[in-house]
Length: 268
Image (cartoon, rainbow, N blue to C red; front, side, top):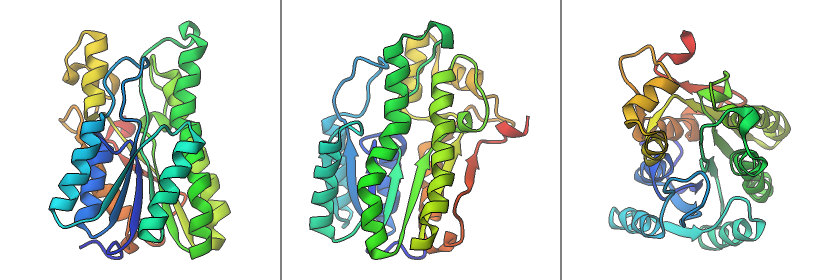
C-alpha cells in the first residue's frame, strides 16, 4: 500500500473515464475515499465524446463493490456553483479533502491563426481556468487542515511547443506555471503542488481525436508525440500509478516539480 493514503480523501476532476477514472480506481485501491467530478454530458466542442453519466455512476459502483467509498458529482469545472456543491458535499461526507487531481481537460487540433475565438476560450477555460476554479475552493480546506497535495495533469505540451496544438500547449504551459506558483504560496501550509506531464495516453480522448482527424489512434499518437521508447502511447494506468506515488507520503518532499511520463519524448 502506498504510504499515507489510507483514509485520505481525493477529489478528481474528469473522473468518468480515461486517466481520471484509472486514477480514482488506483487511489481507492490504496484506501483513499473518492470524490469523482465530471461534466458527464455531451459537448459541442471539441467534438468527441467526453465522460458520460453512466460511466460516472459505474465508477462509484466499482469502487464500492471493491469495498471503497465514493461520491460522484456531475458538474463543469467552469462553474463555481457546480464545484462548490461537490466540494461541500464531499467535505460533509468525508470530513476533508487531502488530494486534488486536476485532470479534466480537452485537446483539439487547429492552426493558431485559424482558431475561432470560441475554441481558444474553451481550451483555456477548461484546461487552465478550470483547475484554478476547483483549487480555489479546495485550498482553504487544505490550509485549515495544514496538509494536502495538488496534482495538475499537464502534458508534454506543457514543456514544449507542438504543431497544430498552440491553444492546448498554451493551456498546459499555463498550468505548469500555476503549479509552480502554488508550490511557493502553499509550502508554509504544508501543501504540495506538482504537475504531471504524460506523452500521448491511450484513452477515449485519443480515440476521439483520431476519429476527427480520419486516422487511427496509433497514427495520431505517433504523429503528435514521437516517443523514444517503442510505444505509441502510455496507458491511463501508468498515469494513475504516478499520481498514487505523488499523492503519498513517499513523495512528501516533492513539490513544485514536473513529473515527466513521456516514454523519452522530451529527450529528442
